[in-house]
Each structure stands twice: as structure tokens, then as C-alpha cells.
Image (cartoon, rainbow, N blue to C red; front, side, top):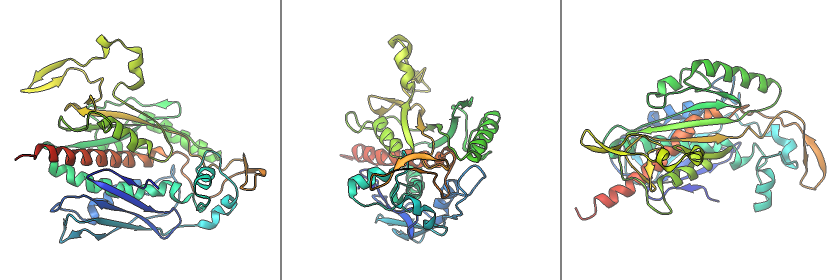
Length: 364
């Protein structure tokens, strides 16, 4: 079912939105990495529902339990299994969707593929599946802190909600700036407009989309593979595997189509004894391999599919009908998607860092 991600640092997420619980199995984590449930819980708390008035009111504490792979506070090198129980599941709220397809959701396509689907909150198609990704991302960050020759920092933030755009200096933005408001936009003026917009659209029973940008500092040169496993290709796959994601661009992205080579190329120079670039249109990746500059990319998210307004649709028996969905849903997924984007970036970097270590250690 495509529930696994990564090569050397490989994760498999499991569980449905309104089942007994959700979680992840991590295989390939090196031994002797200090790890506790508190290390994981910090990121889960940023992702969990019910944390503000502009997200779903589902009340889940999302407390994690490490079931295996950790002993006396350190990883063993064996598979790590992490469990988060579902406490506030209300499957009865989705009874109308048992035979009716929600427009733009995965109801019809899941049934077309498997001939069966979990209609309670969307099952695996629910963003609740991302609990396992965030838990695994927290473990990946711990591994990266051991593998990286210099401190590595991953910071994602909301830059746009519908037509409201923020002005953010990606070279200096920090996590504490992002966490100052519920919408997770470090531009306070734009954040106020975004919050008001989300609240008004939520009251109308509708939803909104937008853009999250992520910057990664401290990545050494050499991560990534030059052909099919380019670093930006794996980042793109990671981000486009997220629920509601619809677009990805790195560095100059689509803006490069309006530039000449003489404008877009990043000139090299020697700075502090290291090869550096004077500009960073490449977004920190050239030829599929990191060049030591900041990596930055953007992810576009569509409006939440499940809305409380009448929409034309059909049933499994091919009858035309209308549906105004019940249940508890985010009017805009972006505020809670910020830690998920960071987690997926950490998973990609951790996998490539381990692959690079295998190359650099060869023959020693």
C-alpha cells in the first residue's frame, strides 16, 4: 500500500483515523542514540488537533509510547515501534459517507482500487496518518544531531493563506518566531489577517489552502544521489506524499523559467576556506546533491476537501445526491502541517546522511 518511506532509515506508518490507534515502525535507526518519549512528544504536541480555534476541535492528547527498540534511554539498533492511541474517535459522525463519496477526497479512488474502504474519517486517507511521520521525524532529528558535522536546523512556516501573503526573511527566521501565533506565520501582521480569514471561512462551512516554506540550515555538501535519488527529488516525493499537498518547488522554482542563465547561475567563491556560492537560486541543491548552502523549498496545499456545505456528488450505487459533510475537520490544514513538513524533511536528510556515511566510511 506504499506505507513505507526511505532506504537506510526506513519508516512504515500504520493505523486509521478512527481505529484503535496510529503509529510507526522505524527500521535502520543506529544504536546508542539517546531517545525518550519526551523527545518525540514535543513535535507531536505541535501537530495534534484541538490546539487552537482555527483547527479541528477533535480532542486528542496524542501521547506517544515507545514499544520497542529503546533500552535505558538509548536506541538499540533494532526496529523502534511508536504507538499513539485514538481517544476521541467519533466514527458515527461519518455514517453519511458510508455510501456517498466526498468531492475531491479519496473515498471514490480508494474504493476503485481496493473494492473496500474505511469510511470512518477516511481511514488511511485522513491526515491522522501523519502522527507516525511526525514521531519518526523526531527520531530522525536525533540521529541527524549525531551525524551532522555542524548544527542542523529545520524551520517551516506558513507564507500564504489564499491571497494573504507574508514577508519573511528566511535567512534569520527561527522556530520561536513561527510558534508565536496559532497560524504559524512569523509575520505578525499577515498572521492576524490569515487568522481572521480562516475563522470567517470556517463559519461559512468552507475551507482554504496556502503555501508553507521550509528552510534547512547546516546541511553539509555531498548529500543526495546524482540520478534517480536526487535530494530535491526525494524531498519532492516526501512533500507530495502529504495529505492535501498539490505542488512543490525548490530554490527559484518556477520563477527560474523567467530568468536567463546569467541571472540564475550561482557564482562560486571561497569564503572562510570553503567553497560557497554568492547567490542561492539553486536552493542548496545542485545536480541532485547538497552544496552546503541553505536548502529552501515551498509546498502548496489545497483547501480541505471535507466541508460543511452542500456539494454535488454521487453514491456508490451511482445515484446523484448532495452532501454537506459532518465531523470535525481543519478549515485550513496549513498551521498543523508545519511540523509535518519539518518531519518529512528530517526523514529525507537522515536517510541521505546515513547513505553518505556509508560512502565516506568505505575503505577506512
